[in-house]
Image 1 (cartoon, rainbow, N blue to C red):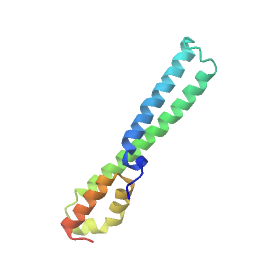
Image 2 (image 1 turned 135 degrees about the vertical axis):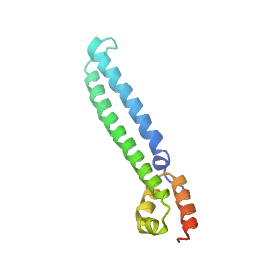
Image 3 (image 1 turned 90 degrees about the vertical axis):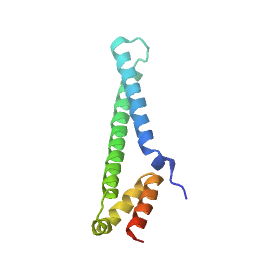
Image 4 (image 1 turned 60 degrees about the vertical axis):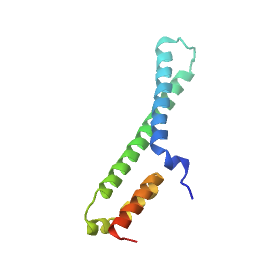
Length: 115
């Protein structure tokens, strides 16, 4: 069964959320300072919502990068004993990450002869 889109493309989606929400916040801030767009009271809400969405997207992107970094560190392990001890953590990370990470885990398990 394929993984959900939010897991398969988590890095791209969170980065897109950062960019779009940053743009919304900047547009709202520009209207607050110049009144050129005529957004009125909505400019405050645009700045507030844009900043909150920006921080949330940034947090999601940082968590995704952290998980990828940890997974890659586990995959670089050359000791079978260390790999087997941390297998639960590696499998959980592979479950949270895109399907290509699960494929890499299957190959690593075959390499070490682990079921």
